[in-house]
Amino acid sequence: MNLVELLEIAARGEDSRHQFKRNATNADGLAAELAAFANSGGGWLFLGFNDDGSIAGLNAADIRRLNQLLGNAASQHVRPPVHPLTENVQTDQGIVMVVEVPDGLAKPYLDNQGRIWVKQGADKRHVTSREEMQRMFQRAALVYADVVPVAGTSTDDIDDKAFSAYFDRRYGASSEFSGLTREQLLQNLGLGDGKDLNLTGLMLFGRNPQRWRPAFEVKAVAFPGKVLHDTRYLDSEDIKGTLLEQFRGAFAFIKRNLHHVQRGRGFNTPGELEIPEIALEELLVNALIHRDYFTSASVRVMVFADRVEIVSPGNLPDSLSPEDIRRGRTIRRNPTLTEHASHILPYRGMGSGIPRALEAWPQIDLVDDPAGNQFSAVIWRPEAEWTEEVTDRKATPVTDQVTDQVTGEVTGEVTGEVTGEVERLARAIQGEMKRSELQAALELKHEDHFREAYLRPALDTGVIEMTIPDKPRSSRQKYRLTALGKVLLKASQDKKE
Image (cartoon, rainbow, N blue to C red; front, side):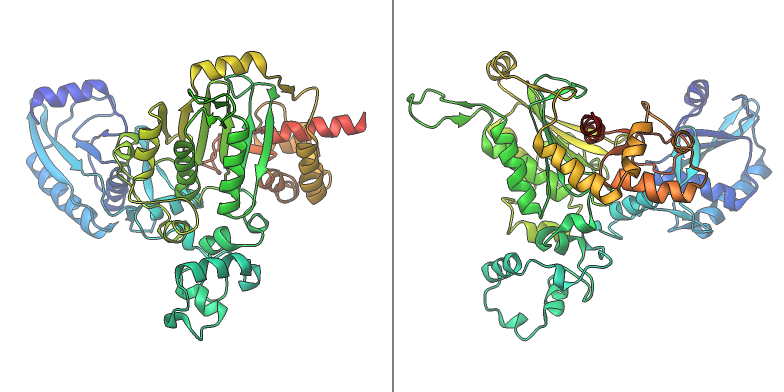
């Protein structure tokens, strides 16, 4: 780096990749900066700048001391060690030390006290959210959500018929597993730890997976128009059960809300789906298998007049991009689940699903949303079909009528489980509100009681959602009604009237 390049960078100011400091004297503080860069894509630390961005410069003695301090911080105060590169740039005011920290390959990097730091704008922050930590360990292949034990479950929660059919079909009368107890068998297959089922065992063979993980379902809605905030809907369903049951239910939902066309066939022959089934099948299976199971959210299927959106919790892992997966590159976020699901769901693996879907139907957009912690596949409908549908199909206004199915789910599953607390919370929400604002609106003095009796049940049942779901403990966190919450509120009002 020469002086001109240095001055150009200084003129742009600090950001997530460039930070300026006058000097460094503490190994722990320097280690936190190095760890934050290594955890956040890498960057440059410039030593020898004043707070106002002007060059202060360092002398030869400063450089010798800083080299020793930097080596000590990088090797002894960061775990695992990082390997920064340094370069000294001579200026009229003195020397500026440029420290380049590469993007870490062994994330997460911790400081000497076991804390994880990441960059946040030009500053850094301490990672405290359990979910964020889990995702970082998952990206480092240190822990996988699909093999985390589900506390309280046991072999009694397995659907014997479904598991036996799978086992016989895949393994037959294998002597390798003969004489094993059911607990031992599940443990050997990676479906449990000998006591509890893990997430793979629960989601593939559990009799009622949502009893333990209520958010792991598919929420499907069909709208008459092109916008998510439409006050009307054509169809709505919460699809529960195992992943196979969710796949079948979601696929059936999509098919019944799309058109069938003749495509040159005879008048009396069965029509083809307006979007090839293979494309929808591949994208739906991809969402169920590769979603982030450390994120407590549902897969969403939304059918609009001009498109179908399949939204999967969790953005693409590591450096994977939409263009990468278009070319067939893949990273298994849930390797154990993927291994077993490939013999249950129509999943072929090898990164071939997305390319196969694109080959069958090129009008697909893949949208990675790190800020929203989600990944979306947007499948565009043929224009002739959705134009006709807008004019021909009649939507059901949410404000005027609630289907028996949704009303039954709301009153039976939500209101029945939490009596009137969730309903009170739903009535109290006005737009987006902080926790303290909601608690005050309900005139509740004790925060613990509010969280346990009101807030957590409302989140678990999908009546409300966080505005910043990937940072549950954010000081800017707010809560708002979901589509289900609005239905609950309307159903409650209609019942009273």
